[in-house]
Image (tube, rainbow, N blue to C red; front, side):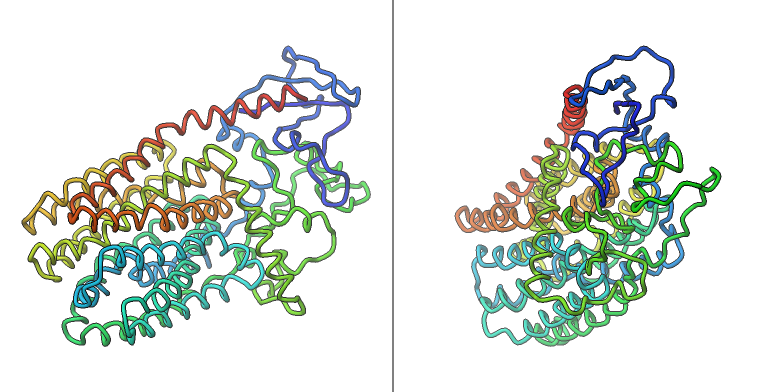
Length: 562
């Protein structure tokens, strides 16, 4: 839905060198009077005495994107959509396959050791949820850190932290030491790399984004499918310490995958040449202020114009974007834009990272963003804690760790199939992402609810396969649903805001499940709590149409107020 305004004086987008437009104008699609169709209009006087014509031409955002070439579309048309992007996808496949074993393989790595030490369920849940909290906090900080130090530097640093985490955990003197060696180090390192993977892969693709996302998601599932039997073999042959040391060495090889993470602006296509004759007027200080180029320079997308947005589609600090001088954290096309900035004080770097991090949280004012973030929190906490509990539950039921590994591997195969299928189907216009996302939530919640009622390994494996199908369906659309409902230019702040709420959830409602287990003495009750979490996510998504309608009414009210 959009409102068109016309005026005898063309309205310019927000400029970095001139005056600041009223905030409401940056939400509107502006068209000069001579370009507007002859239809009945309402006249309304502005505060400056000028008369603006309000045309009720209400269209969905998808239709706007087809009829208006906004600044975001200009950048989107230049993304590689292949080329070096496939090497980025290959690197993300390696990283997702190996590093996800730190979170989803927690039970396989540490269950024998923790059961031998006789630790309580509360301590086990705190170890896992503290790790998961830091993992997702890094999702909020990864973009500001990458702006300051470069994508590859941050990714390689994260891999090294994950390597050190398992290296130290192999020599842990007590389970409490794992809070430092595993929860802190692996949560920080793995979170940096995986969060960056979810952001950088979509930014390299437009038409083939679903296919690229499918390859990345396949890495997660293949790691979950091959990892548990491999970890069980290592534990049987080399014990807890030897298996953990070998896994740390495998993680160190992920530096190869991180080395492919070039900034996307290094590989952008050349900008398209304008079809109109070359401009003969003097060049303006800012190309967005030029009166030449016709109607395109006078338009602002319905999505709020992002001042200072670099060619990587991310937002920059508003204050810094209004300056014409080069800033150290600006995204440019120079070969050294991926290198750490020199001659900048540590206080300045920390201040900029903190300021940009807080600025990203503004997106959570949108009810659509809140539904995505809170729904993702309940879903991910539910299925992460479930997969962590499975090896404990199966071993306590009298079965072997090999049975647990087989169940997890079977679920991973179903997860893989659905992640690939969901990602590929998302490229088609007829595919309804919201309904598919909600179907995955319902299947996941039902499977978790049924699992503790079973006793035989074959029946457990059937339910785990069903659970894998539900998780795969929802996770295949995890980052694509953000692009669908919030826009590609809002993916980094949306991912960061979701990560912050996720981290808060892992510190609050995550450990609550361990307390329920110790209080009730039953894994079934704690799993039913996790099932309830996922059902809450399902019900939240039922309100997404209402949230979209609310945002439309809000924009209409701002238009009328003018």
